[in-house]
Length: 258
Image (cartoon, rainbow, N blue to C red; front, side, top):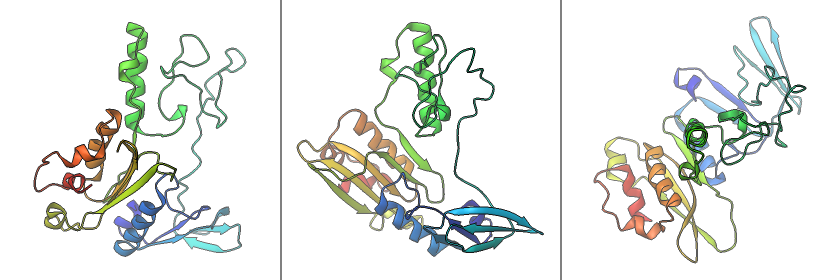
C-alpha cells in the first residue's frame, strides 16, 4: 500500500489464498478489492516465492509455480523471528514456545527467574499496544508483586493503511454464534469525508449477546475498534452499544446500527 500510495506499481505475491491471513476472510477480501480499485496494486495468491535474484538493475522473483516477476525493487514482508543472538543459551537456558518465540506467563516472566520479556519477541499479535501493556504488567509485578489489573483479554491488531483495517478477538465461525455486518455507506460522517467505503463485521454469542470478535476497515476504523475493545473487555452486550447516543455525525455511529 505505502509504495502504491507514493506512485509505484505494486505486485503482491503471497503463498496463501487470502490477503492478511490473520484477519477475517470477508473483511480482508473486501479490503483487497478496495485497494485494487483505488491503487495500482495487483494481488497474486498462491504464488509463493522460491527465489529472488538481482539481475542488472532489476529484481526477479521466481515462484514455486515457475512464474517470474520482474521489478525495480523487491520487498520481503514476511518471516520475522526473534533475534536472540545476544543471549547465551548455554549459560542460561531460555524456554521458547513451539513457534520459536520467548515463552512467558501472563506476567511476562520467562523461564529464567528475574528475567521478563515483552513485545514481538514473545509472539503474536506483534503490536505496539500489546507490547506497551505487557511492559506495564511486568513493571507493576516487579515493583508491587501484582499485575493482574492490567491484563486485558483482547488486543486490537491493525494495519495503518488508508483507510485502516483492524481486528479484535476471534472471527472464526462456531456453534452458538452469529455475525452482524454493517456498511459505512449510510454514515453521514463517512460521506462528508468522501470515504463511504468501509465495513464492520461483528461476531456475537447467541445466548447473551456478548461480542467475541470484530473486524473491519474504513475511515477511523481503529477508533471504532477501540470502543468495541472496551465492550469486549468489560462484557458489554452488543445491544447495549446500540442504546448509546454516540456523537453525530461520527464513524462510531456504525455501532448504533448493530
